[in-house]
Length: 101
Length: 182
Image 1: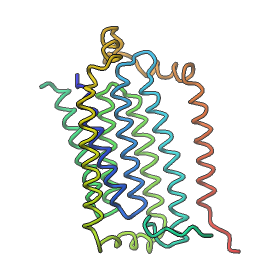
Image 2: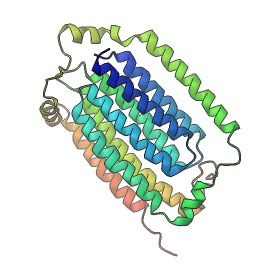
Image 3: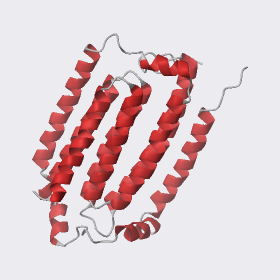
């Protein structure tokens, strides 16, 4: 049996790699991948704690909901990124700073 | 050190290593394909947590859905955008990256401090669950239980999430359509 601390350490590592990607990349698709990585770290924690809930399955159930929400988020975010590329000819988040029509 | 521990450390190493490769790689396509490997290793970790249904969902939805969507959006958006995306960000790679690395490292230290201080094995409800034998046993049939719970206890979040998924898909299709020339 692997301890909860190990899972939490792995989750913390993945979360920090996700933070690094979100902060340092200059490409919106890679920023999106960083966000997905952070979501996955959270899901890992939920599942690790959900092992102690045999009958209600709270952790696993909300991990499923989080996966579905991540899918919805990605679809909308990719549509927005495509629109931004069409309008600005770049998807660098630093250079998309005009709030105009 | 038994087989489960070996597998856990192997999968954790693969997940963290490929995540770091995603962060370090300059090539967007290569980092997307390394993200595949991160997701597969995470699915393996879920299996080790006795959450097999969530692991399968992870593979089906993330690897089959989200990553293929990202690849499609990236590769169908034209050759000129592909080459334009590849050749940006070469100029200043140091200052921005160093600052974000320091921030991420500080955050990691804070998280580790918190985890070690909490020491999750000694939480009240974890101890209670272990005493009451509430842990999932490796032979338990969890998929039945998840299905029953989804239709009884978690029915409201299930319906809400389905409505939200439909709204998100309609919204994405609306956003991604070709704009009319005015």
